[in-house]
Length: 299
Image 1 (spheres, rainbow, N blue to C red):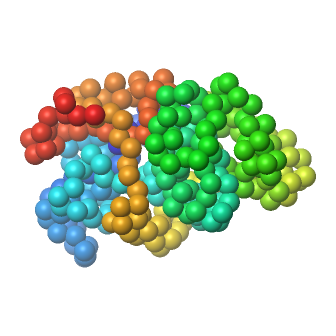
Image 2: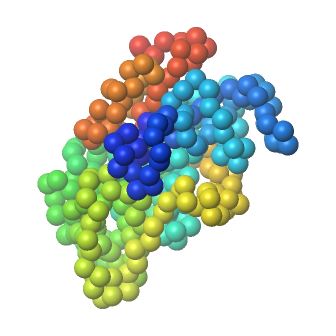
């Protein structure tokens, strides 16, 4: 899977600096060819999905706790993204404490991570307001199950949320975009609402007047999956197990908008950097095409 973080890494703009040279790629799906000493639950030949580093390659090594086993008959392209789905589950259920019956506002809702937040929000029983930058993206959000739609390039985000919620505001805001969208989203929060920040895809890190939180007893919380994995590995394992269960029950449906051959990876980065991605963009290897067929007629 190709995600926005990889575009930051390649420009050395990611918040956690990595020594060069690096191989990009934060997640991959493939066949196990070797199992390390002491590793249980996996065998050579298993179809697995993992999250880590250096995944834009034909072979990659994962720690066992960063891998989930998939149905051997499933298509790897449509594997549930550990990065995106677990990030949304972690952010909404465990950081923002989203409750059944609450209202969730998702910014950047048609993107790779925003599209998973819509689905996780619905699974948790929330009313979901999807916000995106054009009508085509909003149509994608509607198909994913969003209850209300906001074009935040044309509509006033705060006022539209207030209108939808009968002036109560959103209980939770899922914000992977930052920049000029964060402050109006905070102003659209309900009493004791929570904004969970996951990154700044729109560019600038926003500077927020802190009194906006005081007057509503509102909160801003962070959700950083990589740091959660390092500091709370057992909690992260629980979240991955939850994802596997949701997928096995047919409750999540990965949105794949583009399948691109590995040698054409620059096309994928261009789509993300120009904000043209809807859902997930997937890179495939020659080995994938030999087993599953050509991508030319896909999507």
